[in-house]
Amino acid sequence: MSKLLDIQGLRVHFDTLDGPVEALHSVSLSVKEGEIMGVVGESGCGKSVTSLVTIGLATCDIDEGRIAFEGEEMIHKVPEESERILSVLKYFSSFFTIGLILSLFWTFLEPIQGLQVSAVMFVAFSLCFVFTRVLDAPRRKHEKFMRSIRGNKISMIFQEPMTALNPLYTVEKQVSEVLRQHKRLDATDTHKVMKIFQAIISPVEILVNYFRNDWRGALPIIGTLLFILVTHQSNNADLLLGVLMNKPTLLLMTSIFVYLIFWNIFQGNITTSNAANPLHPEGVVALSINTYFVIASNWTNSRFAQIFVSWIVISIFLWIPFGVLITIILSVAILAIPPIQISSYFNLDSAHTRQVVNILKEVRIPNPEAVVKMHPHELSGGMRQRVMIAMMMACEPKLLIADEPTTALDVTIQAQILNLMKDLRDREGTAIMMITHDLGVIAETCDAVTVMYAGSVVETGSLEQVLGSPRMPYTIGLLHSIPKIKETGEERADLPIIPGQVPDPNEKFDGCRFHPRCPFADDLCRTKPPMMQEVSSGHFASCHHTDLTLDLEKAQEAFSAEEFLKSGVNVQ
Image (tube, rainbow, N blue to C red):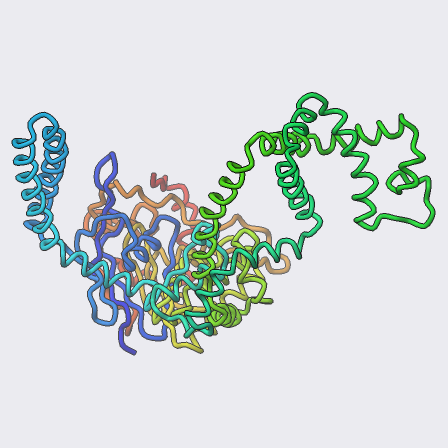
C-alpha cells in the first residue's frame, strides 16, 4: 500500500510569554491507504498538535519538516525576505490609511491642499495594497487549497463533540453545511421558481400553522387586536382608555368574570349539571361574592405579569391614534416579512434533507428523521459523536483523523463507535489516524501503531510488533501499566505505573527525553539523543539499548524493581 499521509521531521513551537516552547521534536510518521494507524502516548505528548498541524488548524509556528498528502505539500513556508517585505508593506499601509483619514478632515479647512494630500495618500495606500496582494498570493492560494482538502479529502473527529458542534444549529444544518461547502449536495427537488413562490407565501403559512397548532393561544391575541381596531373605528378609544386609567380594578374584575364564564366553556370544561363547579356557568352565577373574590385573587396572582403587560400594551394601543397605529403595524410587517421570506428561500430542500438522513443512517443513528431537527444539546454523548462522524464522513474522505473519539463515553457506546469506524474503513476504504491514550482501543482497531513521548515519535511498527514485542522502554512501561486481573490465590498488588512525569516542554535535554524515567538509562542516554533504528522489518524504535528489551517480561519487571522505584525518579 502506498503512503496516503507522510509526515517527516516535523518541528513546531508555540510563542508564549516565557518564550518559544517547542511542542514537536522532529516527528515522522505515515498512514497508508486503507490503514488504521494508532497514535498513542500520555497526555501532552503531542498527538493532538500533530493532527491539528496536519490539517492546518494549529496556532503554532512550523520550524521545519514536511507533510505530504497524496504527494501534495500541506505546509506553506513564506520566505524570510518576503516576510520582511510584507511586514514593511503592512506598516506603511497602516500609516497611509491614517494619513488618508486625517487628510479628509483637512479638506474641511483647506479644500485644495486637503484633496491633494488625500489623493497622494490614496495612491500610496493602493500601491501598498497591490504589492501586498501580489507577494501574499502564494499563501492565499495554499489556504484555498487547504480549505478544499479539509472536510473533503481529510476529515477530523475532535475530542469533545459538544464543543465542536455549533449549539445554535440543528444537526441537519451542520451536516448539510459540510456538503454545501464542498459542493456535494444532491440536485434539488423543487424548481427555483416554485421555491421563490413558496418563500413569498411563507409568512402567511407561518400564521396559518400557528393558528392551527395553537389556536387557543392565538385567539386571545387576535381578538384583542380586533377589539382595539373596532374601538378606534367607533371613536370609543378615549372612553375606554379613561376606564383603564381610572378604574382598572373594575375592568379587571369584569375581565375575570367573562373569563370564568366564556373561556372555560370554550375550552370544553362543561360537565353535566354541575352547579358546584366554580368554572361552570351555573356555578359562577351561584357563587357567593367572597368565593368569587377568592377565585379572582388566585387567578390574578398566578397571571399578574401577563395582566400587567397586557394592561400596558392595550393602553398604549388605545392612546396611539388610529392612523399612526396602522402605520406602525405596516412598518413592522414590511421589516419582518422580507427576512422571513429570505430565510424560507434558503431552507434545505427536501432532497438535501433526505441526503442528510441517509448519512445519519450510515452511522447507525436510530430515528434519523427526528434527529436531523434536533440541536446538539438534545443528544446524548454517543449520539453527538455519531453526528460528528456523520459530518466527517459526509464527503467520503480518504483520511479520517479521530482524536480520542471514545473519550468520556461509556463502554457500550465506545464499542459501537469503534465498530462503526472499522465498518466505515471496510466499506469506504477510508484510512484512519486513531489518536488515543487507550491501548485497549489501539489493540481493538488498529493495523499499525506509532508511540509518541514528549513531542517525539519513539516507536512505530505493526500492531503485532509494537504491542507484541515492544523495544522502546516507554512502550514497555505503557504496557506494564495496564491493570491485570488477579488470579485465584494471588495477593492484590499495587497498580503498576511509569514513575515520574512527562517533562516540561521548556526543559532542554542533551540526551534521551525519557531517560529520567527509564530503568535502563546510563550516561550515554543522558548525553546523546537516540536515533530511530530498525529493530526488525518495518519496526523502528528510538533507544540506545534495544538489546535489553528483547525479553519483554524481564523488561517489565525492571519498571517494578524496588531499587528503581527508590532511585528518586522525578521529572517535573
